[in-house]
Image 1 (cartoon, rainbow, N blue to C red):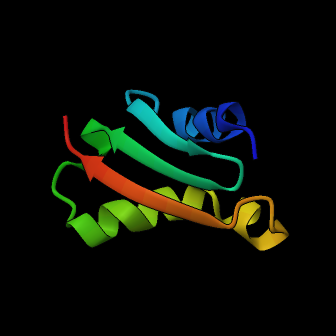
Image 2 (image 1 turned 90 degrees about the vertical axis):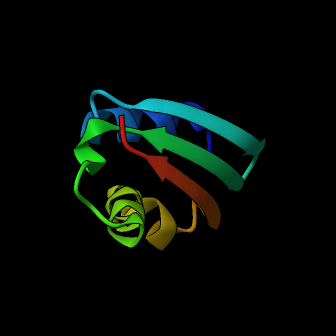
Length: 72
């Protein structure tokens, strides 16, 4: 899976986000910093990110993703 594809999906869903990647191929680590996480627990923040990428996981294009989230 190309980082640009993931980045575009995340930007679509978190327009104000700062997104940083580590890793390559099918295993990524991503940090998403967004004001849309304000008031959400860490688990809820991670679920929001995972839900935006669920189709990529279901298709097997993305196999693993380590997520770090913060609020702006």
